[in-house]
Length: 294
Image 1 (spheres, helix red, strand yellow):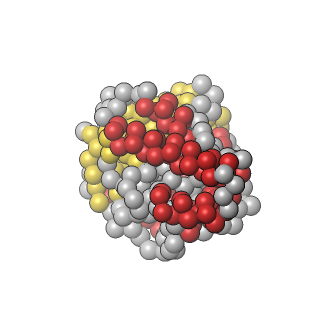
Image 2 (image 1 turned 60 degrees about the vertical axis):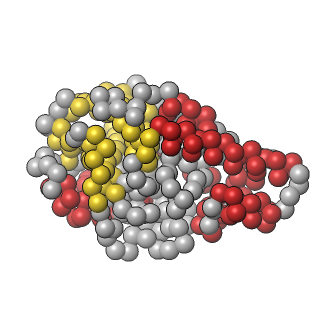
Image 3 (image 1 turned 60 degrees about the horizontal axis):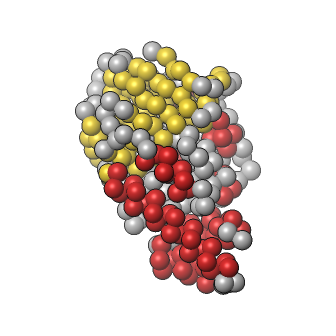
């Protein structure tokens, strides 16, 4: 088993206390374990899913071990291990973080204690090592031990998982995981499915509403049938395209209102009414969204 990459570097092993983002959606998630359900995305590809937050975790089961894509909050760690035991006897061999937010990376520290390598983009690693943003509630996320730029490939037990950094969107460190043999795309929060999880643009972490549609256009060039979103149930290429179009429409609406010199509150009201934004999203993204479209 090996990791191949265009540009990959080994980071110092260990756990650094870092603040990472929890998708808090008006409540304090991560205070008790999520109730997990298992969805089968494809043969040997299982999604550990729950309502709203934390984000999905995806287990790619191979003859040589499990590749786990995202690992929820720290409090979900034992449930994840117990649920995986109902699927396979194979141990976790690699973890992939699709981005740095703690509802996707909160289990890192405990997995590092089990000597599991963790892979993420260089930007996501940088965000996890930076404790300057106190608005995210989860702490002590383990910083990944492997970082890559642009793309990397994990080959394990006959399975291939391609990791692609396609551009800015939710953050500047978003990664998708593509399983060509299974025709599955795991998107992290570059795509969230369902009205409970609208687009969160984390400007503090380099997110961009203007660039997000073009990033998803790159994802849509891949050959897949099933999409595992960052939040929500299993989805399709059609669902991903609809989300892409909605993101483009959001950017266009904000730009038009900025040109019309609408007030901050008028833009916030439009986002609430037309795109389902709630206080956490407005707090996280409104000023950056307006600034990006001026």
